[in-house]
Image 1: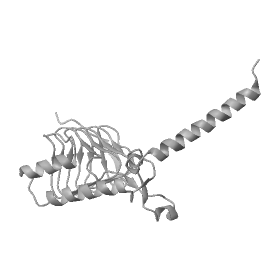
Image 2 (image 1 turned 60 degrees about the horizontal axis):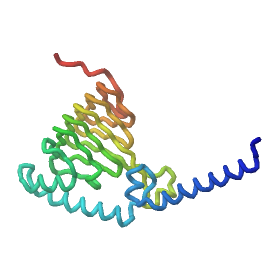
Image 3 (image 1 turned 30 degrees about the horizontal axis):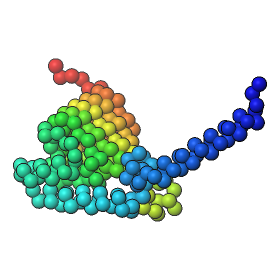
Image 4 (image 1 turned 45 degrees about the vertical axis):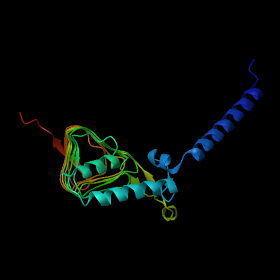
Length: 214
């Protein structure tokens, strides 16, 4: 026969231990890890500031060079580790960290783009990103008191393969754009866009499916 007293005692100990484990894990995570996992993170923390400073120094040097300069390519590979040789990012370019950007093969990013990569920004192969496109992952707290602190969330953005992001488009935090999508110039994408869609406007809405030109 089940001893309910012992059962509830065991349950309370298990719950207490679980909470202690969660608190320990949360405390042991640094602010960069919190940022990458969409938790509220302190942007003034030393480990975050070091990343900001490193990216800014690389970007300042890149703005003085042409994409045809070997030194530019070396700096770009330092900024975005693992960037394929077939992918191009045109200057001037701005990002927060660089190592939060993941590009597939044959990605082209035109001039004057801004990628705020507190959360991961993933762009699939053969995608074209027009000039002045802005991709945001950070999101400030809704509570104004909390917003006075240097803390914010970051939600990843994913863009599929074979997409065309028109010039001046804005991609908001947490958005996923499917494969083979076309986002109209100047559109503001606030919600997920399914595969094979043409989306335009502010906020961007799907107006039709992409029809193959064959």
